[in-house]
Amino acid sequence: MNTIQKASIDWWSETKIEVPEETSKKAEQLLMRELLHKQAKDQSNKQDETIKEEVTMNTQLVSKKGNLLKIMECTAAALVVTAGLTAGGFALRGMSDKPSQVTSITATPAVTTKVADRTFYQLKEGKNYIDLDLDGKKEEIELKNSPTGTSMVDFVITLGNQTIKGSVDREEGLKLRAAALTKEAASIQLLFTHQYFSDDYLTDVYNYENKQLVKVGTFCDEVDNIKVAEDGSFAINQPGGILGTWKDSTVHMVKNTNVNSEITGNYSLEETTAFDKEIKFEYKVKTIMDVKLYKSMDRNSGYAAQLKVGDKAKTIKVVDGKWLYLETESGEEGYLEVNFEDFIIAGTAVKGWEVFDGLPFAG
Image (cartoon, rainbow, N blue to C red; front, side, top):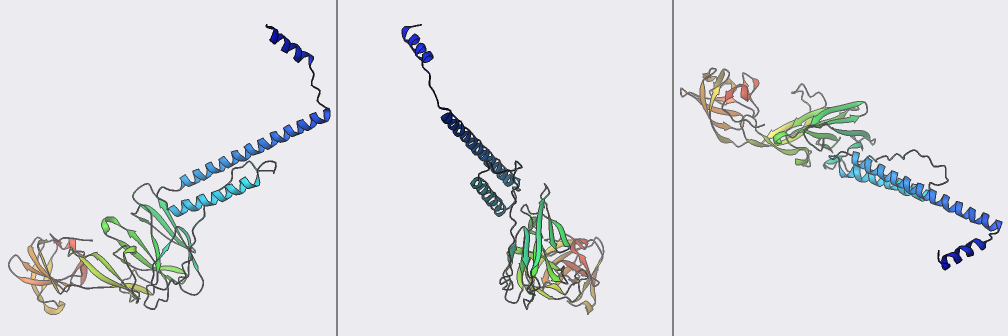
């Protein structure tokens, strides 16, 4: 040990630092306060981190297919909670050590404003409030989409004690729309497309009657493709069924005439299609069932020819979208009644593929 080291040890052992008792207690108190403050701050930071983790987890739990609005609302609500907890300072306030529960906000748009102005309104996932019968009181309608892990998404529409359930082949789930379709704009209807496959759209229309949603009918177009005219009607473009072409139709919501036994409410959908007067339609066909051809475009005109199962013929033209003109293999000619979806055989609608083999089919 050198001289300098020895001198330092001697000085340290001989020197005594006296601290007054009162000063010592104050120092101890200051030290304790500092420790408590640090502990509280650490605890607050830790709780902040826990909440941030919960926010992240809750956001991640939202389906990848879910909409951006829900994520934004969930995050915003969580950030408000986080800010409030931080400002409060958890330490020494009887804070519970249970994790905070972050509740996402469900969009609840009130779409009664100008709802009868022929505009289509988009209903959100969750609860919506609409005055469907325009009596000044809003009805609560809830939409819930549930992914199935397949290309189909299950949906539930709830109004009071009524539920409408189904599935839609659309990854984002069901679109639910509201619009005034009656000529007088006296009530609001709900519409949703539940089939998208291969652009063969199917859209259902419901009317609110006696506190229940009642089906008005179905049309073949996507709900966001249409625009309502001043009289409540709308144009659609749809497959032409057995004739293999696309057709433009106008759809009206009219008083129910009970033609379709499945439509039991006050209203039904009525389609008017604009056909070319006459179009070429040339195909070679073979009959799958017995068919009689009329002499003219009249059921009362009598029969011009008879086709048995397996007989061959060729189609020539379609007139007014209502009559198909054919020529048999033996050279006889005649008319067969059609409605673009079916053949009318002895006054009964029959699916096209049950009548002829060789015709194109659309829809």
